[in-house]
Image 1 (tube, one colour):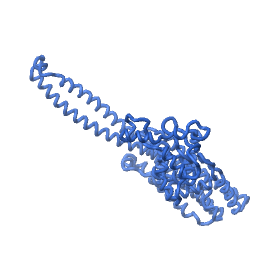
Image 2 (cartoon, rainbow, N blue to C red):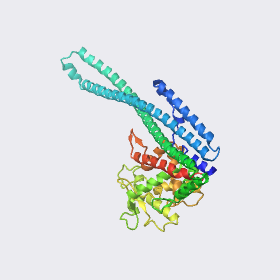
Image 3 (tube, rainbow, N blue to C red):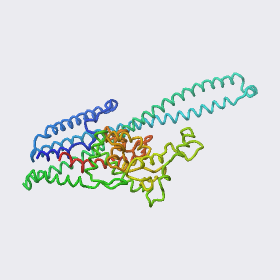
Image 4 (tube, rainbow, N blue to C red):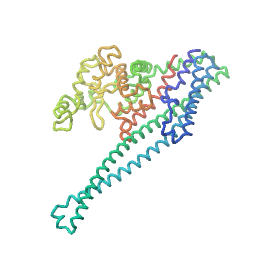
Length: 467
C-alpha cells in the first residue's frame, strides 16, 4: 500500500511546474506603481506556501483510500493557489510590459528628434564652412555680420557636441530598457507556462481523486489491486520504444535510466533531456540523411575539411578574406578520428549523417546530433562522467550524457523554465530565443521542447517513480 501512496506523491508532484508560486515577487518599481496588486500577490504566494505545507504534512502519513484522498485534495488546493498567484503575476507583468514599451517609445522619439537636430546643425555648419575669406569680404554683409555668423558657428559646434553626448546617453538608456523589457516578457512566458502546468495538474489530480472515490465507494477493488494496476501500467511505459536518430529505438525505461544518470552528473532534468532527444529524432526525419550507401551526398560533401580550415587561418582567422572555401573548423578530420576510435563502423563511408539545411554545413552524428569537432570537445568529459575509455556518438548512453553536459553549459542545469527554454533555443540554433527583442530562429524549437518535456514528465516519468 505504501508503494501506491509513493506513486501518487510523485505523479502529482509539482515537478513539471518549473516556476513555483513562491518565486513570484514584485520589483520595487512595480510595487511603487501597483501597491494594492503587489499586496494581493504577496497574499496569494503565502496561501500557496501554506497549501504546500499541508501537502508536505500529509506526505507519507499512511497508505489507504482515506489518506490518499486527503493528500490529493491538498495537492488540488496547492495547484489552485499557484494558479491564482500566477494569474495575478501575469496581470502585473502585462501592465509592467506596457509601461516599459511606452518608455522605450518615448526614448525612440527622443533619438529620432536628436538625429534630426544633428542633421540640421550639420547643414548649418556646412553652410558656414563653405564661406571663403574672399566671399566674406566681397559679400553684401559687413564684417560685423560675418563675425556674428562665426559666433553662430561656435555655438553650433557646442550644440552639436551636447547633442551627440545626449544621443549616446539616450541610446544606452534605450538599450537598457529593451533588455529589461525582454526579461519581463520572459518572466511573463514562464508564469503562463507555470499556470498552464498547474491547470493540467488540477485536471490530473481531480481525475485521480474521482477514480479513488468511485473505487472506494463501490468496493470494486482492494487497495492492493489498485497498486497492482499501477505497476502493470508502469511496466508498459518502461517497455515502450523510444525513437532515436540514426540508431535502433530503445525501451523508454533504458532511455530514462541513461537520462537519470546524466542528470545526476549535470543537474539537467531527465524529462528535458528526453524531450530534446525526441524532438531531434522528429527533426532528423524531416532534415534527411546523407552519406549512406544510397545517398548522393557523402561526408566529404557536407562538412568542412582541412582546406576550409587552412584558408580560415590564411585569412587571419576569418572567412572575410580572399582565400576560399573557408570555415573555422575541420569536421572532416575530426570525423575520421572518431570513426577510427570506435568499433561501430569500419570506415567513414556509409555512416548516416545529417544533411545540410538551407544554409550551412551538415554532418551531425547520432541521437544527440553533435558535429564532429564539438563531440571531440566533450569527449574527455563524457569519458569521465561514465568512466569509459572511448565515447561513441551512436551509443545511446554516451549520446545522452553528451547532450546533458552541453545543455548544462547552456544553463539548463538550473531547472528554471526560462533557462531551459533558452538552452533548447541555443542547442538548436546557437542563439537565444529572442534576438534584439524579436523571435530568434530557435524559438519554435524551444517552445516545442518545453511542451514535450512537460508531457514526458507527466505521462511517463511520474508514473514510474518509486514503484
